[in-house]
Figure (spheres, rainbow, N blue to C red):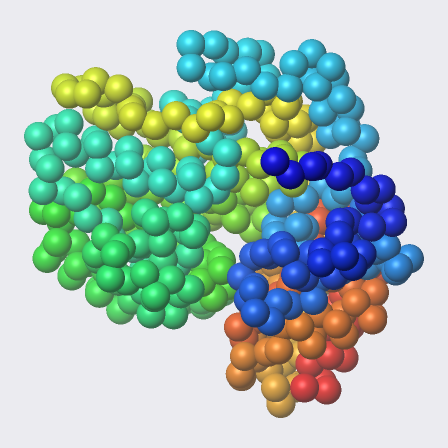
Length: 443
């Protein structure tokens, strides 16, 4: 039996082969980070604190955060309202199982979600991550049709360039060619893929844009359980911003061909696009909606899958009579309490002016990047700013340059983008945009 040795984390992390490793070196040798090689991992920077729109590194450097911790920390870090909510709840109870028990934080959260969600959504299934909320949504759609005696409706339609998570059902509806999961194509469920929407958000909608999707509905509707789509902004599949009319037509086609519409609002929900939900740009309501990321203001992992009463009742008709899904930390009270506090801040409405100001500034300050030879495109919507380069960037190199400039940006592929906290100041945002320009000007 091995002895457990506790070492002061301020000094050393552990011992390996008789040598004392620093935290960074132990991390490099033993900890796997997202989308990083175990053979040649990307560099990591040790964080000791975060406040507002800034991250503090152990070496004393302060970074302006352009990522909102992967789009989640919309109110910034160390927010007093969110801190207080977490402290109060942890003193009461941090977790109880959700099977057979309930509690005020979860009930209050679900009340609020159904109040602010698009019309018609009437049930909430709480989960613990965005990918799981997508798994739940797809499972709901498949069980819904099976319980209607229509098991042949077992496929999902989705546009290319989409991204919905890294778990298996979610991977099956990510772009099969340009996405990150082509290695698993032999074991993933085969879904139906439409060409990605082409009309940009600020262009006149082209009727040609919807024709391929309509043809797929005509050809496959008998086997389609659902269409899943990211409203208005395709996130990690390419940061593509498309016309709301395309989403409106998706709703119409789903209605016409008896297919459920799933809107993945994990990245777009809670104001990021300038509307509370991406669906609001098209003034439509889905049958099922996925939420995550900013739900707790970036404090804790929590997600939700909302659906209509028709879907909820349909899922539970016939055998087995229940929805067979139950995450261990479903409805975690601590996460729900923080989510309630985050939604109370959203409810005050300051985000509208904050996001509008960010959008105006991004359009003014990122547009100059179009003049750079390395840049192919610049696009902005709400608190989302995207600079697309002509070829893939060196992530490790760019992040090192960013840290040297006092900013934090996590590019991927050909995309150098920012989704800052809503509370970022004009000066901080200008530091981010000027840093991007300077770095790309020297590619």
